[in-house]
Image 1 (cartoon, rainbow, N blue to C red):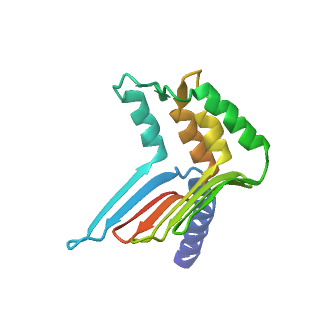
Image 2 (cartoon, one colour; image 1 turned 30 degrees about the vertical axis):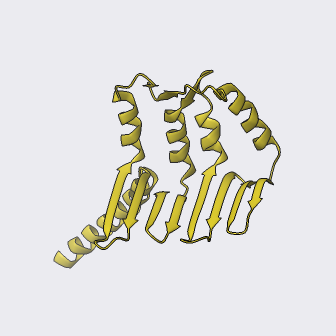
Image 3 (cartoon, rainbow, N blue to C red; image 1 turned 45 degrees about the vertical axis):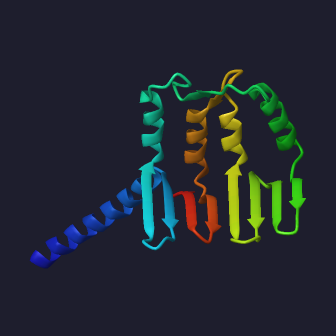
Length: 184
């Protein structure tokens, strides 16, 4: 009798785990991670790990004249947000393409659209080697430009990041430091 109750209890526990674990996995909040390593005589390591929802809440409570309700107001004399939006729409509508390539003796810069991502790569080999890789989903850039005429919609961009579930966004490597920004 005791064995039967134990088997029943284990069966119920197994069914409960089989039901709850997938539900918990579905509701997992994405986190943004930043890791900075400095290679000095005394190496330093800084790690920041925050749920994206916390950043969204932080945007609501920031007290800054240029950040209101998750929108960033830019004050550029050279290029307006409206003009940048128009340029962005052309980039997005062009499909997969390499937009900018600069090749010098010790430096290569590349800006392209690859699938659903905007990609920026910089490689420098003069003196100290450094490398920058930026990979941002198009949906995140779209969301960023969904604000009003002179604003960037930071909150919408965070929401788009949450939905995208992407991995690495930015990596920077040089002789003195390494930076990694990713969402998990």
